[in-house]
Image 1 (cartoon, rainbow, N blue to C red):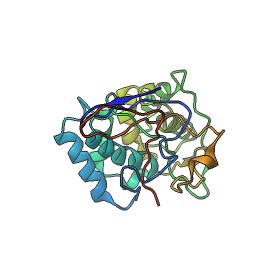
Image 2: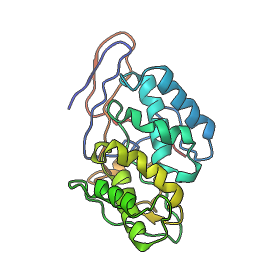
Image 3: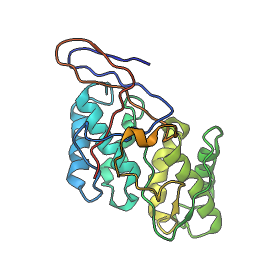
Image 4: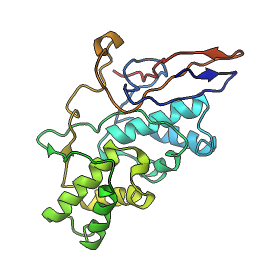
Length: 230
């Protein structure tokens, strides 16, 4: 797949084989779960720049990835409410990178996700019926919450309905006692390694091909988008 970039525009394409963080230092930011200002500032840029309608600019791409990477990686209880409420406005226009939520020591393993059926939405509906938004202490609520959680974290954003996406964030309050780790969450996801170290391995769902160009059209073949991570 060969994208064409002209002027100040950027065309981002998806590839199912490599993580977008397989190489580093291209966009000049890091993932720091304590940096609330970076998350809020990036979200403010997305809103003020109309990125929900058109996310193709380098600036929208970078700021979306700042928001998305922190949202998907950092513990839920430290994500600013404005990020939780507004993040999914950009699902249809912006392209995410692939990263798992940070592992919690001592937590059980999450169930294996099924992105092909409606299990995530069914789990949310069952949580509503069981009153889990008020009391999530039961094993039934726990099981449904883990199914909803892993579908949200591991599947494409359109796997869940908008109500299930937003409902998850509401359930996070009542189900705060239930935590699971997805397979791979314990790996050093923020450690950058050379591409050669990854040859022959499947690192995730998303791959970005891009190049910034100021005045002419440039053809680029499979150049991965990377985050600056330490």
